[in-house]
Image (cartoon, rainbow, N blue to C red):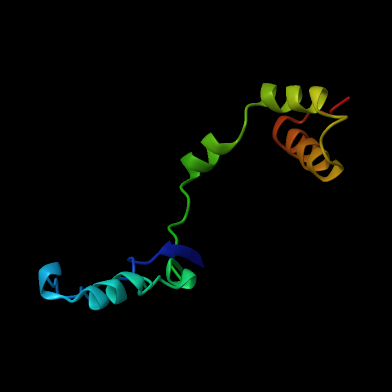
Length: 101
């Protein structure tokens, strides 16, 4: 599911009435009527779309380099959450046959 912007809601245009054709009370009534606003749920809607599979080259480019992974592990070991550290260690061990020690 992907959220997509819908086209903006439009209201039918009112006929332009020259001010000199209106009485003072009619003109004040026109000015005092509030403008209609679009409902907030009409701005986005959920659409089911088929996504293209990611090519192997894009997957390869998305992977960080070994040096960057090792630097992140060394510098961010005390800051990063444990789940992220475990995933990082598994990735390093799988791709480089290195242990983080």
